[in-house]
Length: 213
Image (cartoon, rainbow, N blue to C red; front, side):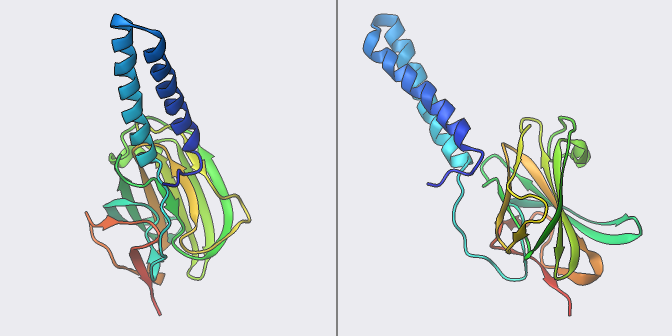
């Protein structure tokens, strides 16, 4: 199983603790040996869970404008910014979801901005104030942008793209460690949404919206 870029150090660290605990089984006896067995099992399970969490499967690319994140559609809203009308789709990623995010369309990365923030749970509407990374793109439908938002526990976002990168639909653009949220802003007049609240999405595969003629 492929481990996502940015997740390997976490998996390697917990696996090292597992090996150290297992070594104690050989050198200790009695109560200390029981302690070593307990921690060996604990870190073995933790290693498996970390590998599962940081998995990065290969996927076929879907049609239209594809989902940016795994999870369920938490919010759909219209947003006005600087006189421009956007439709924002927020996807909440739970602990069991794949946390590698992908591009919804072919495009050119025009900017990547890191913004520090708070510790509000990712499912809360005010999570927009958390630590986040904004990725701006030029695409066939005009400018769009994606916001990777950290949650209460997740305090580290790992962007995979930089300004001036050229990306294809479905390319990996970043990883958010542990529970988190991703918002994508699309020009309202250019798209028709293909999703509803609470729909479950798979990044890069499922159609989020179609492009208007």
